[in-house]
Length: 168
Image (cartoon, rainbow, N blue to C red; front, side):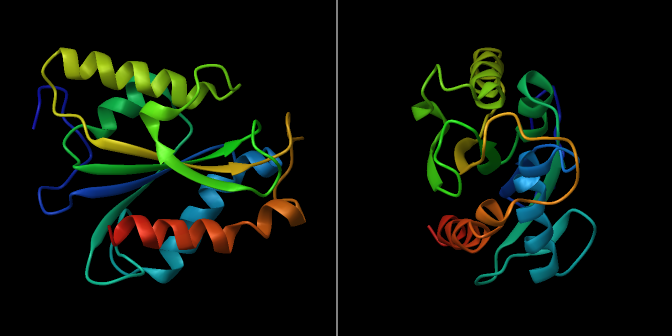
């Protein structure tokens, strides 16, 4: 483990990190997916049996981006970041490596995270392989709890992508 430390337990090599504000409508799609994963898993607050095979994964919810989020990822082998993507069509689910995130997509969590991970790697920290699971949402979601029907309908496809990621 590097000097910055992490949330990682030595026996857990993977984490699913959900970003978003559950009090801002569809921006809360990441935490909503994390709740589904928690229901399917067993164990402590942040450590769960995965919905597939015998993997253990850490489930981390956060609204932070950039350096603080990158520091929390240090020490994991692989991380899947789930977040709302106002640059995708509403309800579309797309998974790709963080390094392939277009620089100008109105998706500031990812851009700040990529730069922060690069900075930590330059300082000698062991950074994970990071993929993004982006779920299309309308731009500028209103305040309030709950997902719109189109975004909620995307959750089963997003869950299937998490399962694929775990089994790779």
